[in-house]
Length: 281
Image (cartoon, rainbow, N blue to C red; front, side, top):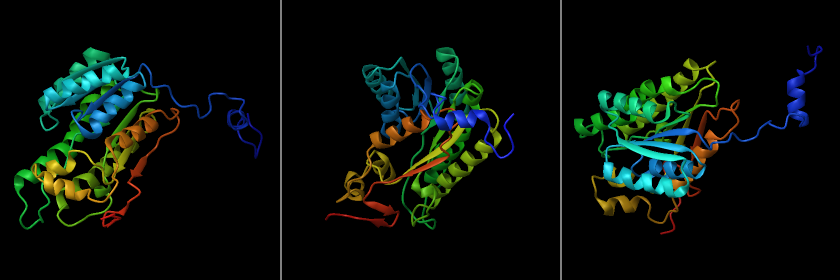
């Protein structure tokens, strides 16, 4: 029993270095990682990044041909195993089937990366379309809830498990033409915080990684395939790349089991805020 005014012995050992495991990174090799929205962008980069650490990766997305290519990249990067299955996070039956498949493949999930989502359109509320709103709510908001509910029983307690939700700077600062997208990403932050409270005591860590301007397919999807408008978003700027965000995911997941990175906001140096971007031309 520690004396009055003195730290417990286990804390003193850690601070003094007597405990060699203190703050050591958690080894990811041999762990199973589920990534949604894994056919491109942050999801594909995460699959390769975790594969490089020796993880087994279970990948889901709607575009099966693109998924197959990412599986090959992950295997080439050194994955313990890499498998993929079609997943539509807007469909509860698809999500439940995916979770059942993950159980068959691995028996457990050590890291869940809820990445599926995206923005559709940049119209003001007065002229926006229901189809765009519904797509954003289904993928970014309800999809996050569905996948988490389905996979949660596969995440072991007190074993360094992770639920890592990919948010956005849009969830922190609203902007014109982004009401629905900003809304669902703000919702992602609230879901993450609620999960953090609900899972307290299980040892399962929950956190949000919120990227700013990143050059992926994001803008092409938002602008309905208009590559000219999409490329103009990044004109004169050095934006984040998908690999930058994936590297941050690996860092979060590899912290010691007693460390939870609740949230990270990651932006390119050229972006100081949503409306403050330095352009060289």
